[in-house]
Amino acid sequence: MTAAYIEDFKSLSSNGASLEPKWLRDVRREGIERFAALGFPTPRNEDWHFTSVAPISEAVFNPLRSEAGRIARSTLDPFTFGQSDWPRLVFVNGRYHVGLSTLNMPGAKEGLRVRDLHTVLHEEPALAMNMLGKISPVGDRAFTALNAALMVDGAVVIIPAGFESAVPIHLVFLSDANAAKGVSHLRNLIFAGQHSKATVIESYVSLGDSHYFTNAVTEVSVEAGATLTHYKIQRESQRAFHVHTIDAKQERDSHYVSFSFATGAALSRTNIYTNLAGEGCGATLNGLYMADDEQHVDHQTNIVHAQPNCFSREIYKGILSGSAHGVFNGKVYVHPIAQKTDGKQTNNNLLLSEHARIDTKPQLEIYADDVRCTHGATVGRLDEMALFYMKSRGVSADKATRLLTYAFAADVLETIEVEAVRAELERATLERFTGASTAE
Image 1 (cartoon, rainbow, N blue to C red):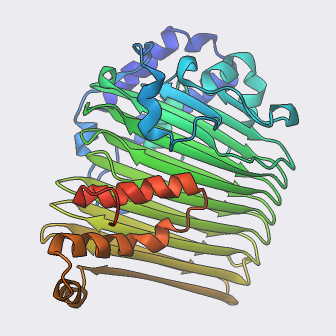
Image 2 (cartoon, helix red, strand yellow):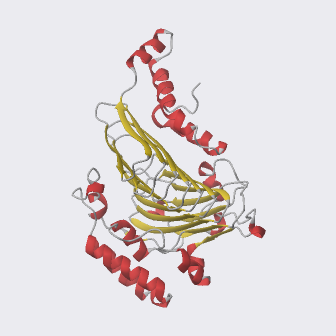
Image 3 (cartoon, rainbow, N blue to C red):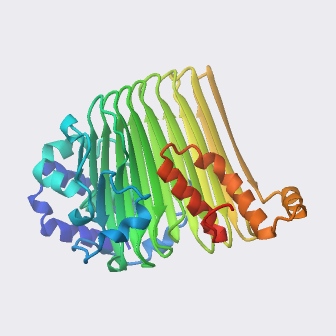
């Protein structure tokens, strides 16, 4: 169904994109030309071998460009971690919603800027030109190319040099019933200036059970000496499709900390790529995915060690039940110049039913000779001996399963430094398969 998206591009061009600056029109044109040439990926593509996007490519989704209906601020309460004072940008069905956003930005006087991309493109095109498309290449990525062609809105976060944010910056992407049979192409730009320190949270959530498609791209620049903590929470509708690519570029002595939490969508794919382009920097990529019924959840990570004396740490865990299918493909690439690289990668998976399955492929590609790199993956079920021991001490089978499942996920959840986020995701982990909100 690539033809439908080409028609969407033509419609966008005739309804306002023709008034955009030439550089942006060029970005869009390159995107649609690459998408038309590539088409949607198939299992013949190595990176998509275990994930078929046929449910997306064979469906028809209409662009979501109209304003959303009236939504009460209290509607956001389940998704804000109980923190009403955090700076927050809210997007409903792919469009910025000023009435639901919290614009009191601590640090605005120091230069902290959090704005919607649509406004930046129209009011500060030079700023957008210096950021957009600089880190996420179109290349051979069909979904990124499609996003480049059809993006309309998203978030722009600029953290000034030397600034340390006391609270996280929360970006909420909400879909409601009006998103049914629609698609939003979100583009987010995050810039962390030299020696800054901040946390940015991206939440993709739904109010109902609509059938829609989210295609998002986030470009992240982490300048020298900066530390950026980046949480991505995916709790879309159980009938939705979700594809999100995060590209990060790191300069000297920087640290990029990522956590991906995925429980929603019928089919989801999260790509997290980071380029350690400066000496002495580090990347920490952790995540937890949980799926049941016939959900398909796919995580792809790629850590490129391009300079010496860098480290990377990666722990991903999956809990799968029903007939769910999980995919993890993690790659660490070490350039010849990247001596003294220290990299560790682990993927652990827990299968709670006979029909749940996982395809995991941790990879190391090393071209330097003075490195310390390890990788590994495990797939298993709950420890029968541990279950027997707990039941013999009077613990019910359901409660024992709940405790052991939580214990499996606990060590990766404990890496989340923001207490409110950690507590909420711990609660969600307990509820996912047990219906309990506490471990009791």
